[in-house]
Amino acid sequence: MNFLRGAMILTLAGTAVKIIGSINRILLSRLLGGEGIGLYQMAYPVYLLFTAIASAGIPIAVSILVGEKIAMGAKGELCSLRKILLKVLLVAGVCLALLVAGSAGWLVETEFISDERAYYGILAVTPAIFLSLLLGGMRGYFQGFQMMTPTAISQITEQFFRVTFMLAAAYLLLPYGLEYAAAGAAGGAGVGAVFGIIVLLLFYKKVDDENYGKNILIKQSDPIKRFLTLAVPISLSNLTIPLTAVLDMFLVPHCLLKAGYSGVETTTMFGYLAGMAQPLVLLAIIPVTAIVFSMVPTLANLRGKSDVAGALHTVNSALKWVLMITVPAGIGMSALGGQLSELLYAAPMATDAMVHTGPAIFLLGLLQISSAVLQGAGKVNIPLYNLTAGMVVKIVFVMFYANNIVECAWGTNLHYAVTVILNLVVLFFYGYRFQLWLWLRIICSALIMGIGLLFIHGFLAEILGYNVATVASLLMATVLYGLLLWLMRSVRWDEIKQLRLKEK
Image: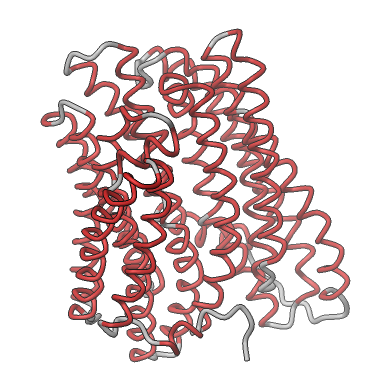
């Protein structure tokens, strides 16, 4: 199970990045409040949309190209390939950044973005869009050598400087108005990307010294065409999170305004949903993202060998770990949504958004892993079609049936659920058979844990106090869940040992 080892390495790096980001979100929420976070969140999805392309399709495509050269023994061509790809990414990055900057005014004038104050935030993120493409390509280059250390260190460095600048800029600009403070926070993404690129540049000499030399040259007719053929479909199939954020940026404020809420109330509630609840969803699915990135090439390799049994075993193993992680996380967030909003954000009014966003954790986890299975099986376009169908359902539901923040949250849950169902139906059609009895045991363990969590928190709150009881009850519920998994034989010790960081 090499993909589990790779997933564990990526999870540790991703966890460190998300912890820093979560601390930042908590501090930024306390500094700017719901309205300020709402303004920031109206600009941030624009950046998130393009960085998703840089962090999904581009690294994978570059790593495949580099891996092909290494497999052919043509390491001597890597320097030339690197220069060609960097030129392509430079041109693409400049074009995208100019497009976003030029469209900022239009997005506000057409009321695609409901609050005109978000204009400054959109301008502030444009440098990061350009830099993120370069960063993604450089990380993919190292991953082609199966080197995860450069990527991990650059991710942590990027996040550290991003957060430091965000908080400093927001604090210094706050006296001039919320719109400028939110824009200053958005500008931190570009600063972080600069430092991430600097870290990767420091690693290049080592790679060049170890891998370049007298190697055979195998001419590839059109590396640019090959790169685009790989990058475009993979990128489009991995835009679930940013597209959801962009849809929410447009749908939720307009839905709430139509329902009769004021502009300030709308921006504040949008901040609760998009700026406080949804980041916890992204935090919970860090391991899922790591499993996805590690599993896709494994499945592609097994497919090339026509190893059907191996592919099915890999799929079932990945689905099992995803369920064991995301189901209890979703139940826990729904059970203690109010307590978490008070503990993390000092914003009890965000309770509804937190509670009803909980199901998105396991639905998004299943969506990502099922889409990855289809990609690894060579069906790279099907996840995009299913994702589009889910989005259509969400748009219709929110525009015509949603009247408050709870119903808007369930619009996202519905979107994920429809996509997951379609993905699983397609997988079943192509011959994948799932361990439904095992899934049921995992779900039962998580439900029992959720009930226990409520009782434990209610008991401890009278003894330890509200916030301390929240932390303590979550820790105790985690132990209870692990014990239930063991008693129900949902996980074995030999499976846990597969998560080691070093191979035998």
